[in-house]
Amino acid sequence: MAERTPVILARELEKSFGSLKAVDRINFSVNPGEVFGFLGPNGAGKTSTMKMIQCISPLSGGHLEVFGMDVERNPREIKRMLGVVPQETNLDPEFSVFENLMVFSRYFDLPRREARERIDTLLEFMQLQEKRDVLIDKLSGGMKRRLLLARSLVNQPKLLIMDEPTIGLDPQGRHLIWEKLKAVQNEGSTIVLTTHYLDEAERLCNRLVIMDRGKILVEGVPEEMVKDFVGSDIVEADNSPEVLACLEDMGARYEVFGDMVQVFTDRPREVAKNLFDNCNPGRVFARRATLEDVFLSLTGRALKD
Amino acid sequence: MRITGYHITNAVWKVWRRNWDVFFKTYQVNFLPPFIEPILYLLAIGYGLGTFVGEIDGIPYVRYIAPALISISIMNAAFFECTYSSYVRMYYQKTFDAIVATPLSIDEVIAGELLWGATRSLIYASLMLLVLIAFGVVDLPSSLLLIPFSFFAGLLFAGIAMCFTAIVPGIDALNYPSFLFITPMFLFSGTFFPLSVLPGPLQVFALAVLPLTQLVVVSRALTLSSYSYLVLYSLAWIAVVGIFFFFLAIRLMRRRLIT
Image (cartoon, rainbow over all chains, first blue to last red; front, side):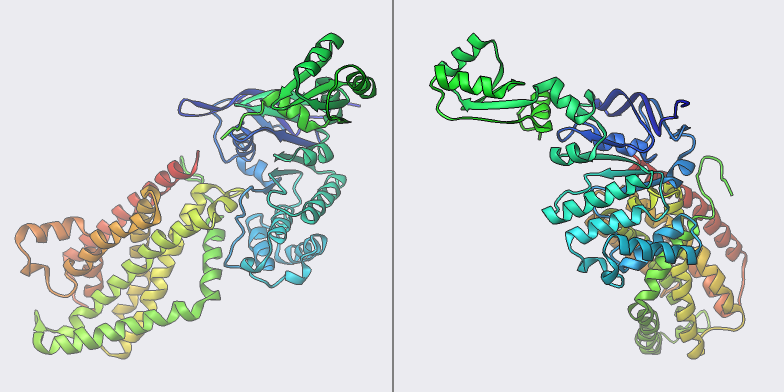
């Protein structure tokens, strides 16, 4: 098969605000049909990167192509193929649910009749049909998110960009959004999202990058990243000199977090047994390693803002 | 249409249309004020105060202030639309952010807002004109030219207003231009008394610098069907300054919104 052109291609991409380098010469590419995640603590440069992809924030340096077109030279053509779900709700409070989508479809030059049909389908898909003629103020947080997602699909985008798609939602709301995103992906769209929720990233993303301070720390497939960086499992025990001495003896890879020690391993039973038998560890428990462990070990535990 | 350096196409009318749609959704609150306001002014100032004033330059006082009322209405409609209302759309409702995520450019968003501000002036001036015609205080048919004129005069004030919107730190700061720019103009632009009673330097200032003065000059010429070369000067002033602020507003807004 011929090599497919990437949907997004970033080379030495840079964004600075005064002396602050929000995005510091990063490289990445997003392939057609995949869900690609940007993870990172606050201020990592995720949103700045999203804004450059959306052609609404000029580059400070480097090169960025979307659908093989330069974001600085062809913003209009690129934006025609984008759907954007913003972090902050920017639905139009003056209009009803249906009118919001109608006004939006006008910006994409959709003929009225076609727009009407498409909007009805989208409202159905997002389970908002009953709220069709309700003003935005009257919607719950979850409904607003779903409407934002519906709005981003009005132009049948080839690339969907979502900044924190499930922020502030209850578990039901999050699951519904995830389900819909999977459906959108199955229709062949490419999805790029940022998130703070690592379970969300693990569940949705085919590939992801973890960013911190404007740099990409690591890129890969979630499961492989977990394996490569922390091993398959984690054994946690109380932090005591005895336990630490034991772990040193075993030659185990571990980290101390306050009153707790985390051991990264592929053989959790062995490590746990060893601790119980020889080190008087107090509590011990083993669990599967997650993306959260990768994230924390890479970006540190200190608060970012 | 592609103006060098500005990304403006016919898409501006989609932004304009969004505001138009909202305006007609709430037409009850939008249409009544322009009917009531001129009636109050005509009664209180034109007929009430006018009884003591009598005539100015041989013109009954109520006929003297009628064009001023229209000019003030043109000014207020566009100015307040493109300050407070635009600020709310820009900052609180994030409407501009939502629109630039579509194929439209920020230039088109701002241009659409300015054209809408001008349209609001046209709507208000037209409604007011109806009242003034009913009271028989304006000449016909020349006064009908106020309808197209109000659009271009409105565009001038929309541009000036949008420049303030682009540079204020917060919505409260818009009180400065409202009280220090609009209110003095309301009083000292040949509206309720002729400029000739002002000290010389103030007269020159009003004619050279104050936009409302130009509107009053043109409107009064039309409602009284009496023309002078000053009308040409004022029309040229409005055109030149209007174009200047139209593009300045777009540039300042770009600076504010593109980061």
